[in-house]
Amino acid sequence: MNYNVPQYYRYIVLFKGEIEDIEPILQVSDMSALRSFNSGRMHLFDESLIPILPAIEYCLHMPRTEMDTYDTDTEVLDNAYDVPQEILIMPDMGLLQYPFPFQPTLIIYADDCLEEVKNRAKSLDAVLGAVSISDLSVNLLMKQWNVLFDKRNLKNGEKLADIDKQYLLDSEKNYYYRHFLRPDNMEMQIMFIMQFLIQ
View: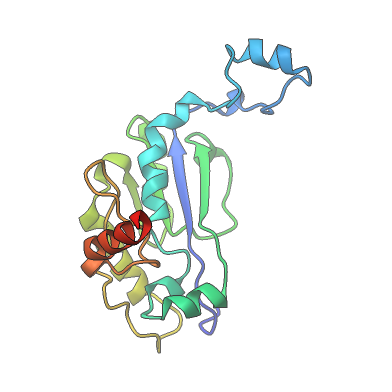
């Protein structure tokens, strides 16, 4: 491990599915045949992914790299690098059949995954371990941000001042991503922005 380079985090989300069902998304080139094959829908969203949507949302609230856990000015972060979230979504049986050439940061599995898959996920050397979707919470989110900061490569980075103020989106609160607004006075900032937009 290179201790002079910040860590990039990789999240794995497992859904209940069969490896044999994996086929190319576009099986036909004729759009009318494609529409009839998908009951008139053109989005081609696999319904077996619905149970893992909360896990994907959770991963989007996690840091992309260890730099996200440092108390760094947002303009510096904006201008310094543009790193997307690295989220691998795969059927549960893939965990048993394919080796990983990297150490995952966190593995989240759907509650209906096979016990064999859950046990395998827990046995892998993921930095934050493996959890089920039903275990995801704001408390876990805060704990995991702190663990990632503690396990950072660059030891001279100052801890994010509001690392313990994490929020998951829900139907009652529409919080913006932490890099754009400070969580400690976020509601006031949102109200200010709304007043500005209304004028």
